[in-house]
Image (cartoon, rainbow, N blue to C red):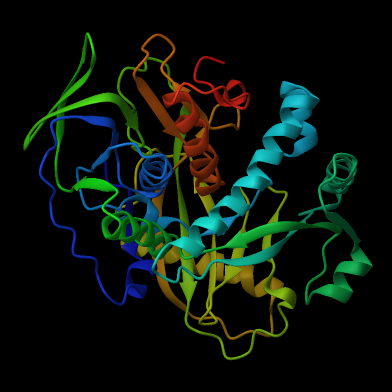
Length: 400
């Protein structure tokens, strides 16, 4: 599956490419991870720091799949509002899920401080505005629910918003505790950390041809030989996960663009992450070199757009939406891309052990908070693999 197409921004930010020498295959691993993107690298980091012997197998080059198309907004709020999630799965589970998402942003910050690459991890507030008057009541319900359960949030009326920003919308919520990151450098930094500390064996450009459960583990036949492991973990992004019969995600495609650097962004107060209540939604952020990254215009087509003129057309439409919010800015598109994007059928990720197979695990972080899901998922999977209790596993289990 082609995961993205177009002119990508993040890959231009790596100053020194990591030289990943193929490891020798060890006699045995505690865990083999298929997929070396954000999910796979975070799982490897979390498991290796527990002392487990881990291998990453990627059919391409690590960190160059969906990670390159990731726009790097790290938000604990989800595609489904908290009050809506309460109605869907109950108050206790919904609040707990939002809590572990918020905790995951903190954990991602901790990782950013350990890796030997500056990934431009910066704490940000998020501004979530009502796209129209009909959504104001939804925002009020969400604000009340967030505050009831201890989440730091502010409610802005239309006048408050006009005092706060160059644009006018019916209402908005500001939430605290989010962040932004360069996802490519973050993922590469994790890989460099693992290499420098001799924590993981990495195998790029290797196909996994057959996976067999044995009496004492998992045997993986690949294009370079056989791997033996106690466990296997699928962190394969939007590829169809093996051994699962049910479809757990709706695949579509989305678009994003990055601007040329803008001389003055002072009108963008606090450089908040910005998104809206409309679905599909516009979202935008800034970068350290004064660019704007924005995305949206999701299309119900489960494949990457191949027509670059179409991708550029979508990028210009996104630019015009950004200009409506910040009309005084001189915005010029420098990079434009389209990518496959997956949303789970119930707005939650699928993370955990196979319903009937004890040694097979999945981290399927579908949704707009994929990096946050990767972080919380790696913690859950670590506990499951080590035989520890983790009450949060019940919320995101595969057979829910």
